[in-house]
Image (tube, rainbow, N blue to C red; front, side, top):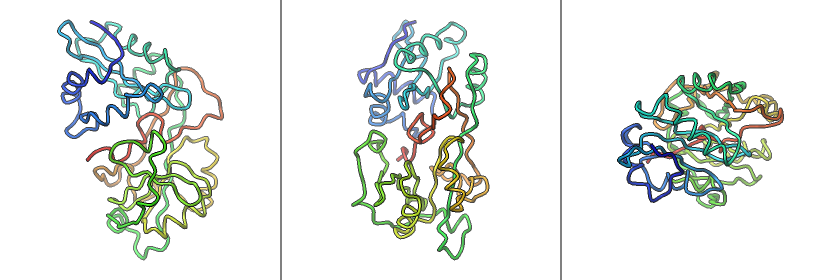
Length: 278
């Protein structure tokens, strides 16, 4: 078996692999999305294991952000397991940056425990519902809205260039993803919280949210402004498709200890993927 870095020329064999292991309409079934996620060495790489017939039997993705390689999209066919393949793929990612991960499933957590990774406090998601709403039920809040934001749309960062999303910059400089199909504005960067909220409600959004690591001191201001943790709110974490009462449960780990000041941004790893399904 061969382990190496993947290129866009591998797309046909990668597509076959992804269609076997991922659900229908998964973003990685789309060539444009794969190229955005892994096509630029400044932002991510894809590492594969090929069998003797040249078929992909293992994959590890890495998203680069904050000086770390965030491990994503890990899958090994059963024939690969227990043969050191994963270690070789991780080593290819480690050649770029130290390793970290979020959104690990149960199998992944077991793997990282065996590898003696450091596990931190889970990421936190704060939500605020438009205070001008007469009714604040799930059906009244998580519904499509018409907002005029075309003049605010930007494609000036890699995250905002993600296929099928609408990234906007507000008047105060705060950044967000418009998800008007479910009534919300998903904040990526906060500059002036009060002005951010005023413009969001003026534009017609029904709710806003922000995800970060527990040690982000901005959360103190959010709480002061009556934002609440998502499990105390009615807006679910999963909105594509909408899954009522599904709240944020995202583990944060790293191979080596990180500085206490390190804060996880929404663009790191793939926990911040928004609207990548057509």
